[in-house]
Length: 153
Image (cartoon, rainbow, N blue to C red; front, side, top):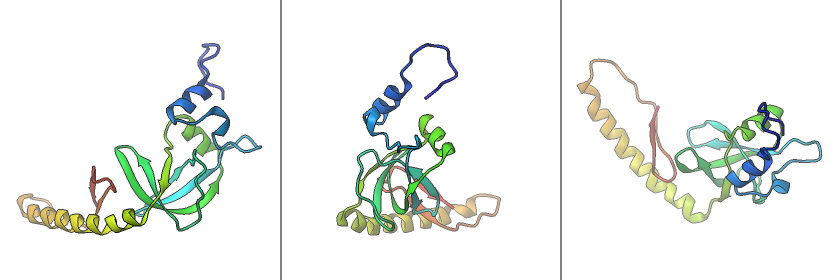
């Protein structure tokens, strides 16, 4: 990997490998020098790309627990082997996170609890609307899987 700094040996491959807790030789790069990425659909229908540093066996439609900016979330695997130089660049900049593990039956069951919390959050949001002089339309309410964040759409 080349960086634009003239520091003569920052060993950025090693730094990235330590940051993501993977060895430099197992960073999912294939023979063509480009990593494989996994395409994940979030509960908010947003599509994100992740790496699979532990080589977890994944299939389309599998539910997985993934790293997100403020904790962990759950998503559905869409494609297991996406390649692209732009994705590779984003990974090197630390913008693409890891798949932690396959979701368990317990994780899937916990989604029902989240849906109940989402209903409560939606009701509170709707109660607070008359206090404001502008019009808002709430489309959906989604909690991050670990409960650290709620998003109103």
